[in-house]
Image 1 (cartoon, rainbow, N blue to C red):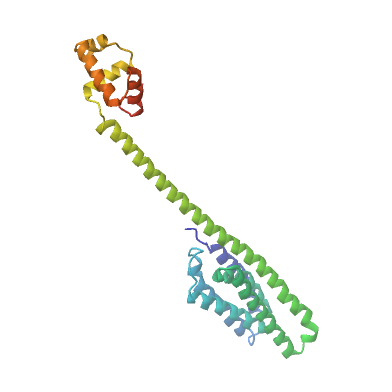
Image 2: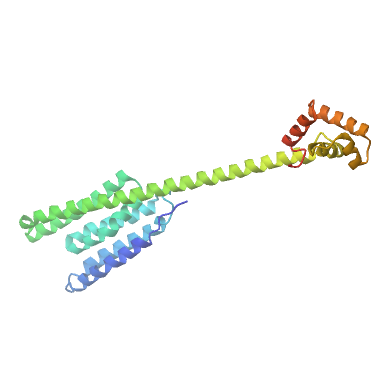
Length: 265
């Protein structure tokens, strides 16, 4: 079964945390505690979801995944109230939430709630500082642009999950067809072998006689090679024609070859 490999999201998270950590370090002692706690909650939520991300795309969503996604969304919404640069973590949060939702419609709803919540939290912070009147255009942009980005990322994630599921189904079908084909071949070989070896209507002497007939030998020549009389050869031929339900020597040879009673010419 095809699985989602989240190692690239690990790299993206690490690359995103580096500048955020540097920005938090530039905050004063009174302001770095809050964003640090929010980033910590985000990381806990991500670590909660990550083991489930390694499962197949068809795996059922668990309550643990939903809790992890909730922690990620809460960390970003609360963090946006006092630390705008936490919005960079959307590059990780969007695909992770989409993977948790595992459906196109649910992914859009979850990300829309998360991004809208971040916009509302930021607007509240601006209102408390008295800056909302001058900042509202940028606040709208801070909601619309991440939402568009989220839909783009989510569409790609959804397509990847769908492709993985279809590829897994195709591989399963091909494997099943291969097994069925192998079994059919074994049954055919068993039937052919049984007809050629264990169920021949001809005796060993009759097979020898018919083999020489297929080489164009006359009754006299057959008798000389097998050390029997031509009359005995004639008797064998009568038995062969009766057993194979044929009327001529040529027909008997053709039927014997078709049934695998004689080795290939």
